[in-house]
Image 1 (tube, one colour):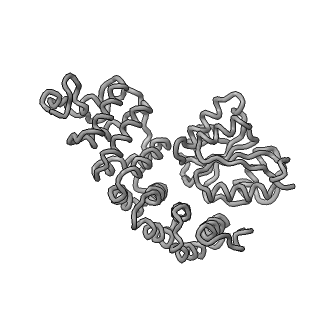
Image 2: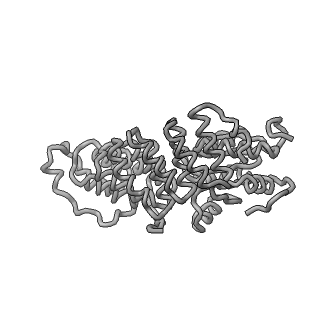
Image 3: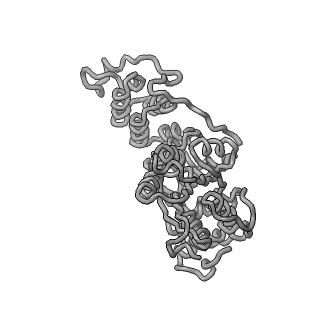
Amino acid sequence: MTGTDGSGPRVLVVDDAVTVRAFSRRVLEADGFVVDEAVNGIEGLERAMAAPPDLVIVDVNMRKMDGYTMLRVLRRDPGLRDVPAIMISTESKASDREQALLAGANWYIVKPPRPEVLVEAARLLTGRPLGGEGAP
Amino acid sequence: MGLVKKKKAAPETAPAPSAPATSARAISDPAIPDGRRDPLTAIEDADASVRRDAAHGLGHAAFPGAEAALARRLQAEGDAGVREAILTALARIGTPDAAAALVPFLDREDAALRNAVLESLQQMPAEVAAAALLPLLDHADADLRIFAVQGLGGLAHPGGADWLKAVMERDTDVNVCLAAVEALAEAGSPEAMTSLEALARRFPDDAFVAFAVDAARASFHGPASAADEPW
C-alpha cells in the first residue's frame, strides 16, 4: 500500500522547515499514510478545518502561529478536538514535553525524527498495527 | 544550561517591573504634541489602547530610553496588540540597544513571543541584528543557538554563509547544525557543500541528517541519486 493512492490514514504535517516536511512525507507515505503539509499554525488550522486529518504532526516554533497555540485552538474545535496530535521539537527538556501535553499533544518527538519512531507513533495514534521498533 | 526559561504570567494590566517614575517630558519636549501624554509614561497605562499608541509613538520618535521602556513593558504585557506594537517599535528603532533589549526574550517559555522577537530582530538592520545574535552561537543552551542560527540565516548579511558553515562544522548539537543546513538551503549557498559533507560525516548514522544534506545538495546542484533513499 502506498500513501499516494489516497487510501491510507491522512496525516497533516505542520512545520516551517521544508526539510522536516519532506522527510516526514517520505517516511509516512512509504508506510501507507497520505500526507498533507502546512508551514505554520494558521495554515495548519485552515487545512485541518477544510479536511480533518486522522493525525496532525506539529512543530513548536513557527512564525505567525506556533505549535502550542495551534494545538490549543484545535482542541477547542468540536470537529477537530479528537484528532490525535504529535508535537515535534528540538526542545528536549521535560518542561517542553509537559508544555506540549498541556497544549493538547498526545505524543512528543524530539528532533531530528527517526523514521521508525515517526512511523510507530503515527501507527499507534491512528489505530494501525504496530511493527518494528517500539515507540519512544 | 546557562539560562532557564522563565514562566511569566502576563495579565493585561500587570505593571512592568521597575517602572520608571513619571516623566516631566510631556510639558517640555517639543516631540510630544500638545495635550498628549509622554509615551514613556503612557506605555505603562492601564488602558491597552493607550499603551499601544505609546509604543507606536516611541517607535516613531527618538526618545532617549525608549528601548528600555519598551522592553520593560514587554516583560509583563499580556495584550497581543500591544505586544505587536512594542515589537514593531523596537524593530523600527533598530539600534544596538533595541536589539540587545530583545535578545533575552528568546529564552522565554512563550513560543509565540520567542518567534515574534526573532522576526523583529530580522527586521532590524542586518549588522545590528547580527551583532546581537552572534554571541548566542556560543551559548550553552542549544535552543538559543538554534534561534541564533535561524535569526542569522534570515539576515541579508555578507557574513551569513560563513557563520552558518562554521556552525555545521563545529556545533556539537545535531539540531543546531540542521538549523544551519535549513538556512543555507533556503539561501542557496553552494559554497557550503564542503561543510555539508563534513556534517554528514559527523553524524553518519542519522537518517534525517543524510536526508537534509542530500536535500540541500539537490537545491544547490539539482537532484542527486543518493537522495532517493537516504536511510
